[in-house]
Amino acid sequence: MRPGRERTASNELIRTEVDRSRGIGYRELLLLRKPQHRTVEGASGMTYAITSQAFWDDPRHPGDLRVTVSVREEGSSGRSDAVGDFIVRPDGTFVGE
Figure 1 (spheres, helix red, strand yellow):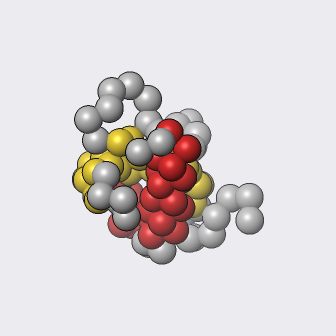
Figure 2 (cartoon, rainbow, N blue to C red):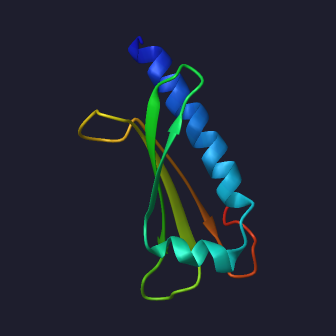
C-alpha cells in the first residue's frame, strides 16, 4: 500500500477510536490508566495495533483525564502512524468544547 493511503487509513482509525472513547463514561475511562492494546484489520486488509491510554492531564491536580489513542501499522517499528487525544472532566464534559 502507498504511504498516503496508509496514513489515511490510520487517520480514519484514529477518528473512529477517539469517537468510540468519547462515548465511554469517565469511570470506564479511568481504567485506561493502564494502557490497553488491541489489533484491528483495516478496510484494506492491513492489520493495525491500537493503543488507548489515559493519564491525569495535570498530575498535581488529578481529575481531568487526557485520553490518547495511537495507531501503528502492525509489523512496523518506531513511532505511531497517527495519534489522537482529548481531555475529559470528571463530570463528563470535554475540555476545550
